[in-house]
Amino acid sequence: MRADRVTMALHVLHGRLDPGQLVEVVMPEMNDQSLLLEGAGFEGEAQSPSDQGTRSLHLTRQRTLPDAVGPGLQVLAVGLNPSLTAADLGYGFASPSNRFWRAAVASGLVSVARDPGRSVKADRVGFTDLVKRATPKAADLKSSEFVDGRRRLEWTISMHEPAIVCVMGVTGWRKAYGRDASLGLQPDPLAGSPVYVMPNPSGLNAHTNHNDLVDHFSEVLSLASSR
Image 1 (cartoon, rainbow, N blue to C red):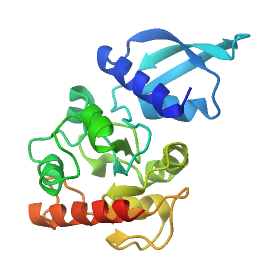
Image 2 (tube, rainbow, N blue to C red; image 1 turned 60 degrees about the vertical axis):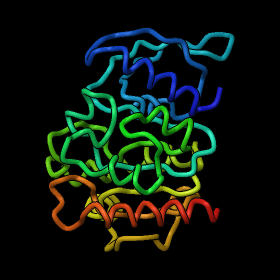
Image 3 (cartoon, rainbow, N blue to C red; image 1 turned 90 degrees about the horizontal axis):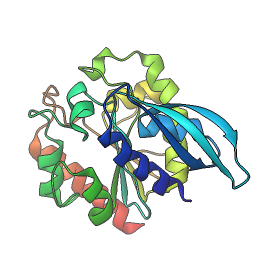
Image 4 (spheres, rainbow, N blue to C red; image 1 turned 60 degrees about the horizontal axis):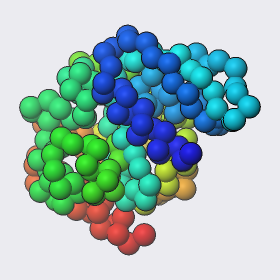
């Protein structure tokens, strides 16, 4: 079974459970299964594999935002980390002051706001985060958490091979990769995909506005189409 199908099945399961709730699932044997589970918003304890190439897992649903991915992604949108509001509502950029969805719809990046499942299927736009721990603000994260998030992010990109990766938050990107990065297309790809870094759409970011965000998303779409 493809990793994106497993991830989306776990995405649906995550939305049906409460934080801390336990569930047992049977999954195919996969490499780096712990990274997949972390991205899907679960912590798990694996049992012995079966003769059919599957493994039973006891999973605990975490208070975080599960990845939303699918085949043939044009864009993989990468947030810094979920807010507590996003974790509880089940979609990213959920704060009323966050400008992501309004700008994403205006640019044509997504066709409907606040529906990551539809964005994956209809618009081929997926969602993940540099750090999966949910906090009131990204400023609450330690720099080491951004560095630790690199392995899972790179694994996610390599599994789903988006045409372009769009990272929202240049400060978090600098913390993760220790580079004096500028906004826009980065000089080096990540796990085989080009990376575009744009401003954080949070309402707390006074250095950008709606029109700026629309322009960045339009550029991301243009670059994705060219690939």
